[in-house]
Image 1 (spheres, rainbow, N blue to C red):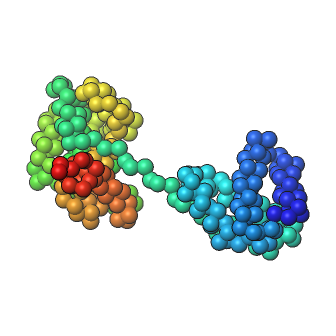
Image 2: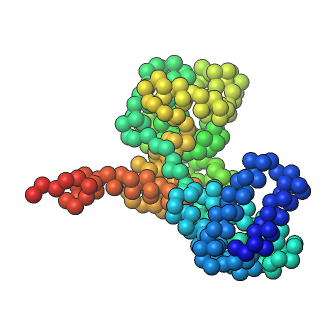
Length: 303
Protein backbone atom coordinates (compact mmCIF):
# COMPACT_ATOMS: atom_id res chain seq x y z
CA UNK A 1 0.00 0.00 0.00
CA UNK A 2 1.15 3.55 -0.68
CA UNK A 3 2.22 5.76 2.26
CA UNK A 4 -0.98 7.74 1.73
CA UNK A 5 -3.11 4.59 2.05
CA UNK A 6 -1.26 3.74 5.25
CA UNK A 7 -1.99 7.21 6.64
CA UNK A 8 -5.65 6.78 5.74
CA UNK A 9 -5.74 3.50 7.67
CA UNK A 10 -4.09 5.18 10.67
CA UNK A 11 -6.70 7.95 10.45
CA UNK A 12 -9.46 5.35 10.66
CA UNK A 13 -7.91 3.76 13.75
CA UNK A 14 -7.56 7.19 15.40
CA UNK A 15 -11.25 7.83 14.71
CA UNK A 16 -12.13 4.55 16.41
CA UNK A 17 -10.11 5.61 19.44
CA UNK A 18 -11.17 9.24 19.67
CA UNK A 19 -14.76 9.17 18.39
CA UNK A 20 -15.97 5.69 19.30
CA UNK A 21 -13.73 5.39 22.36
CA UNK A 22 -12.84 1.77 21.71
CA UNK A 23 -10.60 0.03 24.20
CA UNK A 24 -6.90 -0.51 23.40
CA UNK A 25 -7.56 -4.25 23.14
CA UNK A 26 -10.31 -3.77 20.57
CA UNK A 27 -8.19 -1.32 18.63
CA UNK A 28 -5.35 -3.85 18.52
CA UNK A 29 -7.77 -6.43 17.10
CA UNK A 30 -8.88 -3.99 14.39
CA UNK A 31 -5.28 -3.18 13.53
CA UNK A 32 -4.26 -6.84 13.28
CA UNK A 33 -7.21 -7.70 11.05
CA UNK A 34 -6.65 -4.71 8.76
CA UNK A 35 -2.88 -5.22 8.62
CA UNK A 36 -3.50 -8.77 7.37
CA UNK A 37 -5.77 -7.45 4.65
CA UNK A 38 -3.28 -4.72 3.75
CA UNK A 39 -0.54 -7.35 3.38
CA UNK A 40 -2.85 -9.39 1.15
CA UNK A 41 -3.49 -6.35 -1.06
CA UNK A 42 0.24 -5.62 -1.36
CA UNK A 43 0.87 -9.25 -2.28
CA UNK A 44 -1.57 -8.83 -5.17
CA UNK A 45 -0.22 -5.48 -6.35
CA UNK A 46 -3.03 -3.32 -4.95
CA UNK A 47 -1.67 0.00 -3.76
CA UNK A 48 -4.68 2.08 -2.73
CA UNK A 49 -8.14 1.56 -1.24
CA UNK A 50 -10.06 2.62 -4.35
CA UNK A 51 -8.51 -0.33 -6.23
CA UNK A 52 -9.98 -2.86 -3.76
CA UNK A 53 -13.06 -4.62 -5.14
CA UNK A 54 -15.42 -7.26 -3.77
CA UNK A 55 -13.48 -10.05 -5.46
CA UNK A 56 -10.34 -9.00 -3.58
CA UNK A 57 -12.21 -9.19 -0.29
CA UNK A 58 -13.69 -12.59 -1.18
CA UNK A 59 -10.27 -13.98 -2.07
CA UNK A 60 -8.86 -12.74 1.22
CA UNK A 61 -11.73 -14.32 3.18
CA UNK A 62 -11.34 -17.59 1.26
CA UNK A 63 -7.63 -17.74 2.06
CA UNK A 64 -8.22 -17.08 5.74
CA UNK A 65 -10.89 -19.76 5.77
CA UNK A 66 -8.58 -22.30 4.10
CA UNK A 67 -6.03 -21.60 6.80
CA UNK A 68 -8.50 -22.63 9.45
CA UNK A 69 -10.10 -19.38 10.58
CA UNK A 70 -13.61 -19.99 11.90
CA UNK A 71 -16.81 -18.33 10.74
CA UNK A 72 -17.09 -15.98 13.72
CA UNK A 73 -13.52 -14.73 13.32
CA UNK A 74 -14.10 -14.19 9.61
CA UNK A 75 -17.26 -12.24 10.38
CA UNK A 76 -15.24 -10.08 12.76
CA UNK A 77 -12.61 -9.38 10.08
CA UNK A 78 -15.30 -8.52 7.54
CA UNK A 79 -16.91 -6.18 10.06
CA UNK A 80 -13.57 -4.38 10.44
CA UNK A 81 -13.28 -4.03 6.65
CA UNK A 82 -16.82 -2.72 6.29
CA UNK A 83 -16.17 -0.15 9.02
CA UNK A 84 -12.93 0.94 7.34
CA UNK A 85 -14.56 1.45 3.96
CA UNK A 86 -17.54 3.28 5.47
CA UNK A 87 -15.02 5.68 7.00
CA UNK A 88 -13.17 6.05 3.68
CA UNK A 89 -16.47 6.70 1.90
CA UNK A 90 -17.26 9.53 4.32
CA UNK A 91 -13.77 10.92 3.71
CA UNK A 92 -14.25 10.78 -0.05
CA UNK A 93 -11.29 8.41 -0.46
CA UNK A 94 -13.37 5.67 -2.16
CA UNK A 95 -16.69 5.59 -3.97
CA UNK A 96 -17.81 2.11 -2.93
CA UNK A 97 -17.64 -0.35 -0.04
CA UNK A 98 -16.24 -3.61 -1.49
CA UNK A 99 -16.89 -5.53 1.73
CA UNK A 100 -20.55 -4.56 1.98
CA UNK A 101 -22.02 -7.67 0.36
CA UNK A 102 -19.30 -10.23 1.13
CA UNK A 103 -20.42 -12.88 3.59
CA UNK A 104 -18.34 -15.19 5.75
CA UNK A 105 -18.88 -18.94 5.27
CA UNK A 106 -21.65 -20.17 7.50
CA UNK A 107 -20.59 -21.87 10.68
CA UNK A 108 -21.12 -25.60 10.64
CA UNK A 109 -24.24 -26.50 12.54
CA UNK A 110 -23.39 -28.66 15.53
CA UNK A 111 -24.87 -32.11 15.24
CA UNK A 112 -27.55 -32.76 17.86
CA UNK A 113 -26.57 -35.12 20.62
CA UNK A 114 -28.29 -38.49 20.58
CA UNK A 115 -28.53 -41.63 22.66
CA UNK A 116 -28.02 -45.00 21.03
CA UNK A 117 -30.76 -47.62 21.16
CA UNK A 118 -29.22 -49.42 24.14
CA UNK A 119 -28.94 -46.18 26.11
CA UNK A 120 -32.58 -45.33 25.45
CA UNK A 121 -33.61 -48.81 26.63
CA UNK A 122 -31.56 -48.35 29.81
CA UNK A 123 -32.93 -44.86 30.40
CA UNK A 124 -36.57 -45.98 30.43
CA UNK A 125 -35.87 -49.10 32.53
CA UNK A 126 -35.35 -47.34 35.86
CA UNK A 127 -36.84 -49.08 38.91
CA UNK A 128 -39.87 -47.93 40.88
CA UNK A 129 -43.65 -48.12 40.55
CA UNK A 130 -44.75 -45.03 42.47
CA UNK A 131 -46.93 -42.43 40.69
CA UNK A 132 -43.98 -40.20 39.79
CA UNK A 133 -41.99 -43.19 38.53
CA UNK A 134 -44.89 -44.24 36.32
CA UNK A 135 -45.34 -40.66 35.11
CA UNK A 136 -41.67 -40.25 34.24
CA UNK A 137 -41.60 -43.56 32.41
CA UNK A 138 -44.60 -42.54 30.30
CA UNK A 139 -42.99 -39.18 29.52
CA UNK A 140 -39.72 -40.75 28.38
CA UNK A 141 -41.43 -43.44 26.33
CA UNK A 142 -43.64 -40.87 24.59
CA UNK A 143 -40.70 -38.54 23.88
CA UNK A 144 -38.75 -41.31 22.19
CA UNK A 145 -41.71 -43.05 20.58
CA UNK A 146 -43.13 -39.98 18.86
CA UNK A 147 -40.31 -37.42 18.68
CA UNK A 148 -42.28 -34.71 20.46
CA UNK A 149 -40.93 -31.31 21.39
CA UNK A 150 -40.96 -30.55 25.11
CA UNK A 151 -43.63 -27.87 24.69
CA UNK A 152 -45.78 -30.27 22.65
CA UNK A 153 -45.62 -32.95 25.32
CA UNK A 154 -46.39 -30.57 28.18
CA UNK A 155 -49.37 -29.05 26.36
CA UNK A 156 -51.11 -32.43 26.09
CA UNK A 157 -54.34 -32.85 28.00
CA UNK A 158 -55.94 -36.14 29.00
CA UNK A 159 -58.33 -35.85 26.08
CA UNK A 160 -55.42 -36.15 23.66
CA UNK A 161 -54.88 -39.79 24.68
CA UNK A 162 -58.51 -40.84 24.98
CA UNK A 163 -57.96 -43.27 22.09
CA UNK A 164 -54.39 -44.19 22.94
CA UNK A 165 -55.06 -47.85 22.15
CA UNK A 166 -55.28 -46.77 18.51
CA UNK A 167 -51.59 -45.93 18.74
CA UNK A 168 -51.70 -42.27 17.86
CA UNK A 169 -51.92 -38.86 19.49
CA UNK A 170 -52.70 -35.40 18.15
CA UNK A 171 -50.28 -32.65 19.18
CA UNK A 172 -50.09 -28.91 18.63
CA UNK A 173 -46.68 -27.77 17.42
CA UNK A 174 -45.01 -24.53 16.34
CA UNK A 175 -47.25 -21.99 14.68
CA UNK A 176 -50.26 -23.60 16.41
CA UNK A 177 -50.19 -26.35 13.78
CA UNK A 178 -51.61 -29.71 14.76
CA UNK A 179 -50.37 -33.05 13.55
CA UNK A 180 -51.12 -36.65 14.37
CA UNK A 181 -48.18 -38.82 15.35
CA UNK A 182 -47.96 -42.56 15.94
CA UNK A 183 -47.31 -43.92 19.42
CA UNK A 184 -45.35 -47.15 19.75
CA UNK A 185 -46.51 -50.20 21.65
CA UNK A 186 -44.24 -49.68 24.65
CA UNK A 187 -45.26 -46.03 24.93
CA UNK A 188 -48.93 -47.06 24.81
CA UNK A 189 -48.36 -49.51 27.68
CA UNK A 190 -46.51 -46.84 29.69
CA UNK A 191 -49.26 -44.27 29.07
CA UNK A 192 -52.00 -46.70 30.09
CA UNK A 193 -50.12 -47.41 33.32
CA UNK A 194 -49.83 -43.68 33.97
CA UNK A 195 -53.53 -43.07 33.31
CA UNK A 196 -54.31 -45.66 36.00
CA UNK A 197 -51.88 -44.07 38.48
CA UNK A 198 -52.71 -40.45 37.61
CA UNK A 199 -55.78 -40.00 39.91
CA UNK A 200 -53.49 -40.31 42.95
CA UNK A 201 -51.89 -36.97 42.02
CA UNK A 202 -54.92 -35.24 40.47
CA UNK A 203 -56.42 -33.38 43.42
CA UNK A 204 -57.48 -30.30 41.46
CA UNK A 205 -59.31 -31.64 38.41
CA UNK A 206 -56.30 -30.63 36.31
CA UNK A 207 -56.85 -31.34 32.57
CA UNK A 208 -53.12 -31.73 31.88
CA UNK A 209 -51.98 -35.22 30.97
CA UNK A 210 -48.74 -35.10 32.97
CA UNK A 211 -48.75 -33.82 36.54
CA UNK A 212 -46.28 -32.64 39.13
CA UNK A 213 -46.14 -33.94 42.69
CA UNK A 214 -48.70 -31.33 43.75
CA UNK A 215 -51.10 -32.12 40.92
CA UNK A 216 -50.29 -29.22 38.60
CA UNK A 217 -49.30 -29.27 34.95
CA UNK A 218 -45.59 -30.01 34.71
CA UNK A 219 -43.23 -27.15 33.90
CA UNK A 220 -40.42 -27.47 31.32
CA UNK A 221 -37.80 -27.09 34.05
CA UNK A 222 -39.32 -29.90 36.09
CA UNK A 223 -39.17 -32.29 33.14
CA UNK A 224 -35.58 -31.30 32.39
CA UNK A 225 -34.55 -31.90 36.00
CA UNK A 226 -36.36 -35.22 36.23
CA UNK A 227 -34.81 -36.44 33.00
CA UNK A 228 -31.31 -35.54 34.20
CA UNK A 229 -32.01 -37.34 37.46
CA UNK A 230 -33.19 -40.50 35.65
CA UNK A 231 -30.16 -40.44 33.37
CA UNK A 232 -27.77 -40.22 36.34
CA UNK A 233 -29.72 -42.93 38.11
CA UNK A 234 -29.21 -45.23 35.11
CA UNK A 235 -25.52 -44.40 34.72
CA UNK A 236 -25.84 -42.52 31.43
CA UNK A 237 -23.03 -40.00 31.15
CA UNK A 238 -23.22 -36.56 29.61
CA UNK A 239 -25.96 -33.95 29.57
CA UNK A 240 -29.22 -35.72 28.76
CA UNK A 241 -32.10 -33.38 27.95
CA UNK A 242 -35.63 -33.74 26.48
CA UNK A 243 -34.64 -32.64 22.98
CA UNK A 244 -31.99 -35.37 22.93
CA UNK A 245 -34.80 -37.95 22.90
CA UNK A 246 -36.39 -36.15 19.94
CA UNK A 247 -33.01 -36.20 18.15
CA UNK A 248 -32.61 -39.89 18.96
CA UNK A 249 -36.08 -40.65 17.62
CA UNK A 250 -35.31 -38.87 14.34
CA UNK A 251 -31.83 -40.29 13.76
CA UNK A 252 -32.82 -43.88 14.64
CA UNK A 253 -35.89 -43.71 12.40
CA UNK A 254 -33.95 -42.23 9.51
CA UNK A 255 -31.18 -44.79 9.92
CA UNK A 256 -33.70 -47.61 9.67
CA UNK A 257 -36.00 -46.23 6.98
CA UNK A 258 -33.99 -43.72 4.95
CA UNK A 259 -37.26 -41.78 4.43
CA UNK A 260 -36.39 -38.15 5.10
CA UNK A 261 -39.85 -36.85 4.10
CA UNK A 262 -41.58 -39.14 6.57
CA UNK A 263 -39.24 -38.03 9.36
CA UNK A 264 -39.96 -34.41 8.43
CA UNK A 265 -43.70 -35.00 8.79
CA UNK A 266 -43.35 -36.83 12.08
CA UNK A 267 -41.17 -34.09 13.56
CA UNK A 268 -43.47 -31.33 12.33
CA UNK A 269 -40.73 -29.48 10.45
CA UNK A 270 -42.06 -26.91 7.98
CA UNK A 271 -38.79 -26.98 6.00
CA UNK A 272 -37.08 -30.22 5.06
CA UNK A 273 -33.76 -28.37 5.37
CA UNK A 274 -34.28 -28.47 9.14
CA UNK A 275 -34.69 -32.24 8.99
CA UNK A 276 -31.63 -32.76 6.81
CA UNK A 277 -29.29 -32.35 9.76
CA UNK A 278 -30.24 -35.91 10.68
CA UNK A 279 -28.78 -37.17 7.42
CA UNK A 280 -25.38 -36.17 8.83
CA UNK A 281 -26.01 -38.32 11.86
CA UNK A 282 -26.99 -41.19 9.59
CA UNK A 283 -23.87 -40.66 7.51
CA UNK A 284 -21.71 -41.03 10.60
CA UNK A 285 -23.17 -44.49 11.09
CA UNK A 286 -22.73 -45.34 7.41
CA UNK A 287 -19.13 -44.16 7.49
CA UNK A 288 -18.38 -46.44 10.42
CA UNK A 289 -19.90 -49.40 8.59
CA UNK A 290 -17.94 -48.49 5.46
CA UNK A 291 -14.66 -48.24 7.33
CA UNK A 292 -15.24 -51.63 8.91
CA UNK A 293 -16.48 -53.46 5.84
CA UNK A 294 -15.16 -52.00 2.58
CA UNK A 295 -11.99 -53.71 1.32
CA UNK A 296 -10.38 -50.39 0.39
CA UNK A 297 -11.50 -48.41 3.43
CA UNK A 298 -9.37 -47.56 6.44
CA UNK A 299 -8.88 -51.03 7.82
CA UNK A 300 -5.90 -52.98 6.53
CA UNK A 301 -6.81 -55.46 3.83
CA UNK A 302 -5.59 -59.02 3.90
CA UNK A 303 -3.51 -60.06 0.92
